[in-house]
Length: 89
Image (cartoon, rainbow, N blue to C red):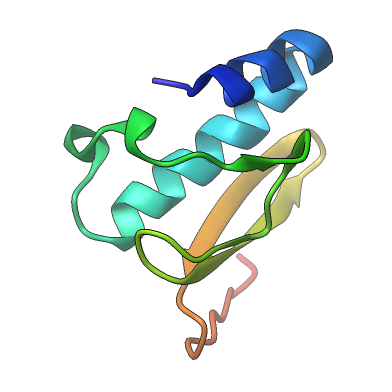
C-alpha cells in the first residue's frame, strides 16, 4: 500500500514515520469519499525524501496532524478553501 519512496521513508525512520504516513493516507481517502478501497498505492506523499503537507493530485488538499493527548495523534485532510474546526472534549 506504500509507493517505493514511501516504503523507503518508513524504513529509514521507523514506526513513528509509518503511523504519520498511514494516518495521512487514511485521512486523504476518507476526504475524497472513497475509503481504503480507493487504493493507498495510487498517490505518493513523499517528495524529495520528506512527507508532504499538501497534495495537488489527484485533488488539491492539505494535511494537519493534531495531538489529542500525549502520544495520541490524528490527521485531518481538507481542501484548500475549507476550514476545519476541532472542538476539544
